Length: 300
Image (cartoon, rainbow, N blue to C red; front, side, top):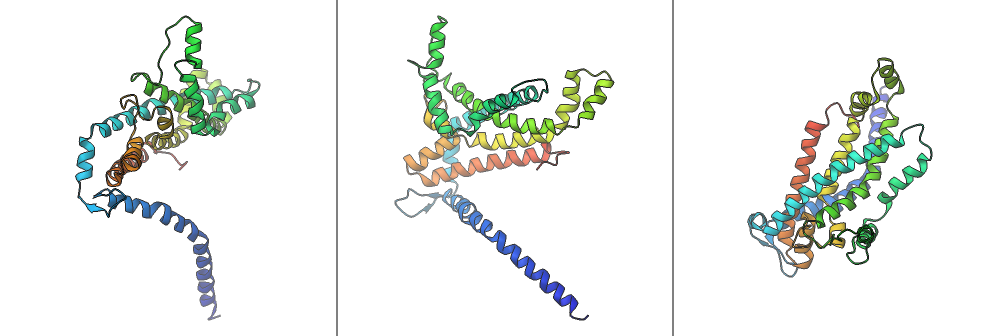
């Protein structure tokens, strides 16, 4: 009887050790590929480092230079514009598509769902190449349609006023299917009796949508908004492929500037400072969303 507590604690200790052994690989991967690079980047942000010589400590000079750099401030503004005009249209269109495809009377829903979701599984590199052809000023699909309609053709990716909207359109097209699938899952989780009770009370379909559907999918909306914020502030691939930041920096973004300074100009310290500014922005937005947007939410 006296040995029972000892055996219990010994067994519990052994089970905890086994549990730690199972999660150890994840912690090692996180430490090697996330934590150490972040700490190293934090250090490089305060140095002058060009890969050819040892880092030289310069204090906050890189950060002062970044906010005096016209290219970086333009990239900041472009990234905010890109995020605003990508996130909200993509979420609204995704919700509309989900509501339409959740209609029990609609036939061929599986085909429509596959068509909407297909762009999300296509590599952004491949998708960007296709949209390069669509936007081609000479033989692109869009200008061919305009010419067929006797309308003036456009230099979609070479006009400073049209380049950013053209890139944004690609991102909305790519993300719509993902938002649609998540919203669709949320809509199918709403109890049917809520709509039946509202119908008995005489509520119209539009009123049911705003008083039942929208509040019930609030956690889904919050989740999609946070993920979209993080993704849109890290936009790089389609910008790099379609415009390389041009024309005259009208489509350059923060990550694009980081890439240029790090790998084209060998300004690793300066690029690290930009990366930390980006990290600070995304962390602030995420924390703000969690504080003010996650109320009554239990999805995350």
